[in-house]
Image 1 (tube, each protein chain N blue to C red):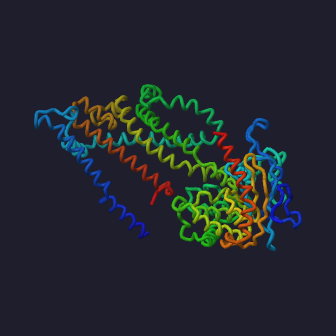
Image 2: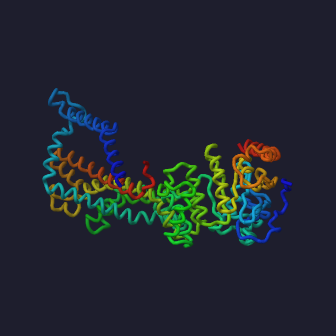
Image 3: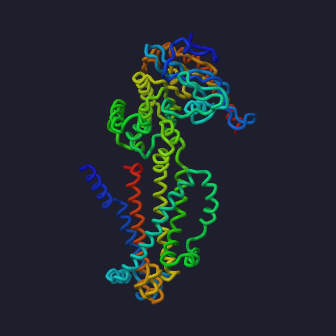
Length: 298
Length: 283
C-alpha cells in the first residue's frame, strides 16, 4: 500500500506525540493579491511531514515536495518558514500551530531553517562565522562553545580546511554543505530545502544526495525539500508529495517503502524502478500542463 | 605568515615583470615623448603642433616641479587643499553614510527626505559657491562646504543603492536564526552595504579634488588668500595665481600635482576599502 489518496490523514495520530519535526499543512490556501481577483497560488493544500517512523527513534522524516517549476511549492515553504503569510488554512509544527486563522504569518524561528535555492551564506562572514551565527544570535551557546561545535561539525562534513575561507572562495557544492551545517547548528526540528540541488551538476548532485542522507541518519532532523526531479524525490524521501501545477495541490501522496538507510544501489533496485514507473505518468502530466500554461502566458 | 609574505613578494614580482607593468611604462613614456616633441616642434622644425605646442614641455614642467618641491609655499598650498579635501570628504562620510542607511532602512524617512534630496542632488557643487560664501562666516568654511557637497551626494546614493540591493534571503536567514532588528542592522545591512560605501568613497574623493580646486579659484584661495601671492590658499589658487602671473610651467606643474594627489587619495581609499572588505578580494 504505497499510494494514498491525496486527502488521507497521515499516521502521526497512531504514534505518541513527538517534539521533533512533524509538520502538518491543513487546507492551506494562498492567493497573491485581492481575494477575488488575485492569483491563486496554493489551493486547499493538505499533507503532512510525518514524525519519525521506521526506526525506534521518533524523530524526523524526509519528505519531498515534487512539482513543476513555478507551481507554488516555494510559497508553501515560505509559509512554513514564516517568510510569507497564507490566505487561509493552518500549519502546525509538532501539533503547535505556526500560522492559522487570526495569525496568517508564522514567526520565523530556529526550529525551522531554510536552505535556499541559490544559497544564502553571508558573503562577508567566513564559513565558520556563518556556521556559528545562529547559536550566537540566539544566545544558545557562548562564542567558544559555538566555535568548538562548529569545528567538529565542519570537520565531520569534510570542511576542515575551509573553516576560515569566505563562501566566495569555495565551489557551490561545498557552499551548500556549509549552509546545511549552518542550519544544523541551530538544532532545528525541520530543515526546509528549496531545490537545494538545482544549480549543481549531476556528479556533484549524486554526492550531495548521499551526503544529505548521511546528515539525516546522523542528526535525525526532519527534512522537507522541494524538487522537480522525480528520481531525487524517490531516492531520498520517505514520502513524496506530487503537486499539481498552478494552483498547487497534492495530486498524489506516495510513501516510499524502500528501507532506510539507503545508498546509491537503490537507484538500480527493482522497487525503485516500479515506483518510478508508477509515478512518472502523473508527474509528466503536470509537466505538460505547466508547459501549456507557460505557452499561454506568452 | 611566511606564506603570506611569499605570496606578496610573488605578487610584487608579478607586478614588476608582468605585462601590465610594461604596458604602463610604455604608455606613459609614449605620452611624454609625444608631449615633449609636440611642445618643442616649433623651435625644432618651425612646424607648430596644434594645441600641444602651446603647452610647456614635460622637461620644463619637471624642472619647475623640482624647484617647487623645495619651496615651503607650494607645500603649504598642497597642504591647504588636502586639508579641505579631507574635511569635506570626512564630513560627507560622517553625514552621508548614516543618512543613506536611514533612507534605505525606513520607508517613512525615505518618503520624507528623498524628494528634497533629489532636487538638491543635480545642482552642481560649483553652483553652490556664491551661496555658500554668503552663508558661511569664513571663506575656509565655504570652500569646505562646497567640497563636502561634491562627495556627499555620491556617498548617499551609493549607500542607499547598496543597502537596498542586499538579497532578501540574507534577512530571512538571519531572522530564522534568531536575529533581532539591531542584529540585522549590524550584521547584515552594515556589512552588506560596505562594498557600496567603499565605491562611493573612492568616487567621492575624486570629485572632492575636482571641486576643491574650482572652489579655491573662484573664491580666491580662502582665508589665506588675502595674504596674496603663491603663498596663498590651495593648489587651485596656486594655479590661478600662476595663470595671472603668466607662468605656464607652474600651471601645468600645479595640474600634475593635483593629478598625483587625487591618484594617491583614490589609491589609499581603495586599499582601505580592500582591507575592510576582505571577502571581495579574489585570490
